[in-house]
Image (tube, rainbow, N blue to C red; front, side):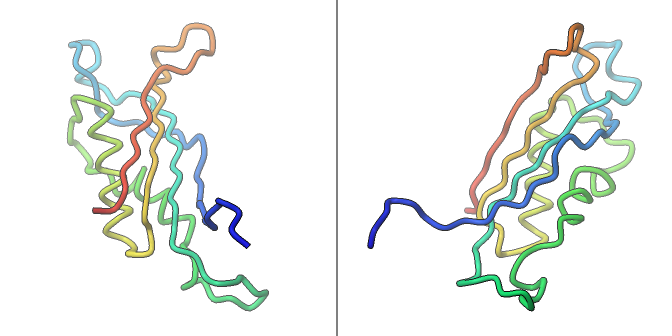
Length: 127
């Protein structure tokens, strides 16, 4: 029976706080900016996930966290947060061939005056 829906698995890391050298204005370029990063990685899935399915049929969530934190090059200034998102996406694609699509949302916390979220969402499919 065709339902029009495809099966999928999305791993998520939400609201990770990371300080990154980013920005275009002089007051932004010398100090790290606080960012809130959310990552969604879509994977090729197993036919079924039984209780004893090994991790190799999925992905370690900590790999996503690593891509948005310790995998960011220390001391590198990213002019645009879009470049930060691209770096995270590239890292995740290099980690695992099962990842078919990655979406990264970045909120610049320093711009928020009343709790609003100002930032970008960048999504890329594996080429």
